[in-house]
Image (cartoon, rainbow, N blue to C red; front, side, top):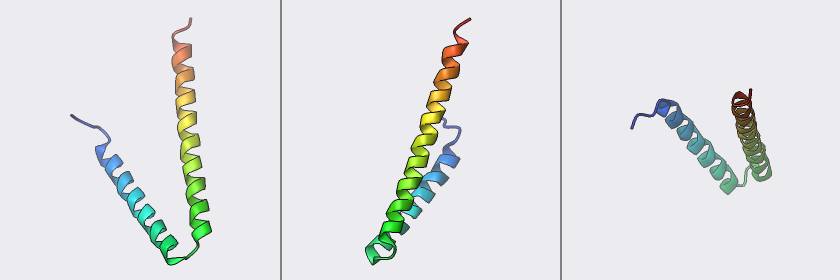
Length: 68
C-alpha cells in the first residue's frame, strides 16, 4: 500500500495532536478556557467549510464533464 502524501499526513496529525494536547492542558490549568474553546470552534468550522467547498466544487466539475 503506497500512500503518496503519507509524510504530509503524518506531520499534520502530529501537529494536530500537539495543539490538542496543549489546549487540553491550558483548559485543565484554567487558563483561557472559553478562548481555547472558541478558537477550536472557529478552526473546526473553517475546516468543515473548506471540505464542503472542495466536495461541492469537485462534484460540480465532475457533473459538468459528463454532459455535452
